[in-house]
Image 1 (cartoon, rainbow over the protein chains, first blue to last red):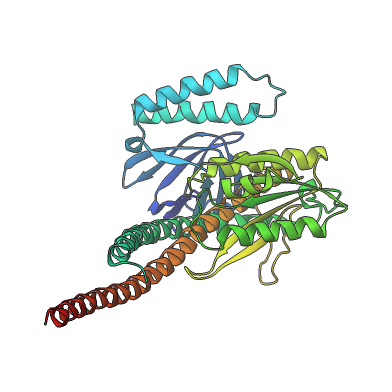
Image 2 (image 1 turned 30 degrees about the vertical axis):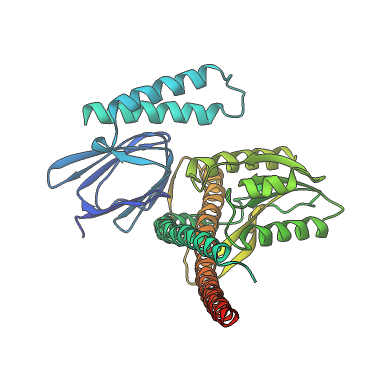
Length: 135
Length: 285
């Protein structure tokens, strides 16, 4: 029985994280879920949100965009289009992004083609701001 | 024969050109390295996405999706990726030639174009073709966001029946010397056949498999487009580096030849002057 979970976080731009962790909390499409070692094989889509993991008693957080998470044999792979640590996000810029996303969303109606994208953009911007200001 | 002064002027202008082409070559070499790193960095994501899709496909046949279903191709969309800047040898013209060939093959179909890069746009805008979108003056800053943008619209148009198939034409990067124009089919996706050694993994799903499959496929399309973009950027810099390297060595050759001409002209001048002096001396005797 292994008590270590391997977390790998990849985006199209980079392999962001490839480390052993104790536990992971991820923003699933149908609700936040936690992953501990020896989790069942699992595939879920993610919504933009805060992904945090615990490593040697310390908790680290990232803002992630929508994507997928796969857990298999104590390896958790997170695929998302964007991800960033708190120290990589400029709070002022994030604030600006929230405003822009809100403005963009307000011009669209729920039936418009880009509505879902705009919603995701806003949610991601909000999460980035949250992670940037609260760590 | 040109005068000494004229030749000198030409030598210095060729020297200037040589400096510029040399600088461009070095800039391209640096950009090429960065583009290759970006292409390499995208690989884990692409591989994982493919693996997950294959696992999902191995679950069974009930996972059908319009994106995986072939249908008669009446309306086709072709994404053509060229560069915004020239001076990169035959890079753009070979891509444009391929695009023309693609359209000729499908003369009975309606082909519309999505053009990435100003070179293709400048070429096709004066011709009788349907241009659906153009993305110009990006200068190699092709982002995942743009890929997502194109991918999302492609998906929508495919689902609504506006377009029956999507292709992307780009230069695949083989080496700095060789870039191969490549045509890839994006939609409908060739159904991913599970490989034999891969036993179906029994997943717990969240949400239901078919919802997951739909969003995974969308991501996969974005990724295919993004990967083509990365390849295209790397190819462009590779092509420009090679073209500029050739130009630099041509300039060196030309300078050598002109220097020889220049020395000849100088010598001829000296000889003539000597002759004149001797002739004057003779006539004074």
